[in-house]
Length: 73
Image (tube, rainbow, N blue to C red; front, side, top):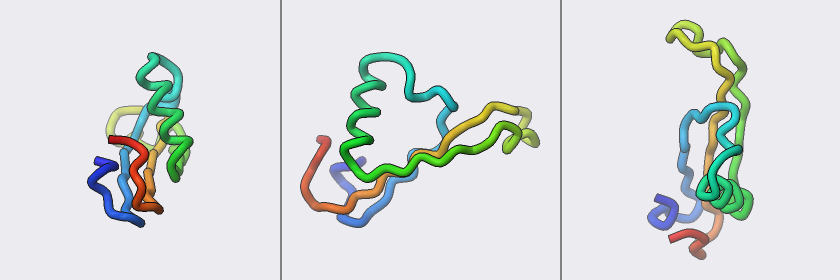
């Protein structure tokens, strides 16, 4: 998706579990890539989705593309 994104475009990755950044080698590579591009990570507190039957804290990950050069194919 990132390679198709125009400069100044935005990808909202959506909700991820609170410990999304701990795990496999692939996830660690993805985390490093997120650090190399313009990324916002926002905390969503536990209970925000209580009405849907979950009380788990989550995060929203947003990837912004500021430049036209490709980081990830």
